[in-house]
Length: 299
Ligand code: ADP
Ligand code: MG
Image 1 (cartoon, rainbow, N blue to C red):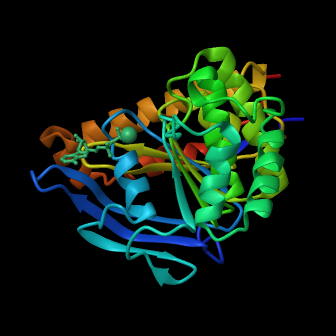
Image 2: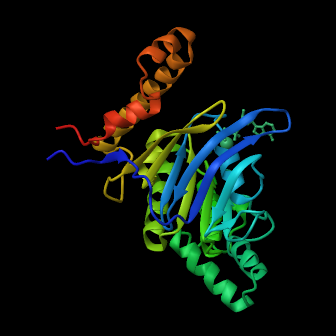
Image 3: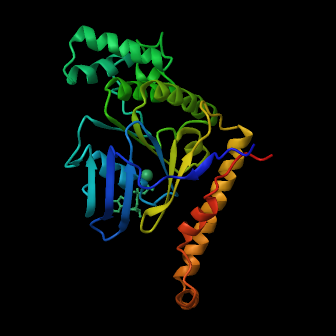
């Protein structure tokens, strides 16, 4: 049976935890980083923002975090407009950003103490979350004594221990080797399955997006905008080397290429004249239309 594993996301999507409406951003030097991004994210959804370097993924994530105030549009979380950073929206970067003079446990406990937990509670929670990322036995190690992957796990454990309503991740595994990345993907899937946090995860890697996301929002660049919004219905845990997933990622790459080609063809005057006579749907919508029946595994 041909299961539908990749389908266009439904619109409207019902109750939104995070709502972006016509979000645009122009940096001081006049670079138009984002144009009219409209997106609803439900509570507990794991959304991957996928796009090439420079397409505005980080700008969008920082706008969600409240570190960048978009020059146009509106972002609300639980109906309230984002007006600045908040511990309810935690950003995780590619650099683990640990205090080098504190042990793994102290790095977590420090953040938890700052949140108001007693020393005893902070220590217990730190140990619990280090265990969840499989770092039991390393709680006394300083960051420089840990590998890059282990440092990233400490950083992830700290973010999860802080229990933010929304976790924002900016290509967090970009600097890790392939094996460690695969380990992190497994780990993140298992902790997310337990916690069901709302996660917005930025990546330029199609396969990473398909392994992690319930939903993959494909962005195009210059200026950044939503090209496609796809639901991923592969069962978890997902394996990046799974044949079906590899086939789907090839398919997504092809969809992105086609949508881009159609967009740039539409932008030329020649096609434009033709378009006026025979109006086609915009590139992205056409490709989505082709996807309407969903894409399944090869037979
Ligand atoms: P991505 O994360 O997808 O690589 P970014 O959001 O970092 O993309 O950047 C989007 C666009 O905005 C790029 O053209 C980039 O050069 C520009 N840009 C990003 N940050 C700044 C900044 N602080 N000042 C000026 N331009 C910026
Ligand atoms: Mg970026």
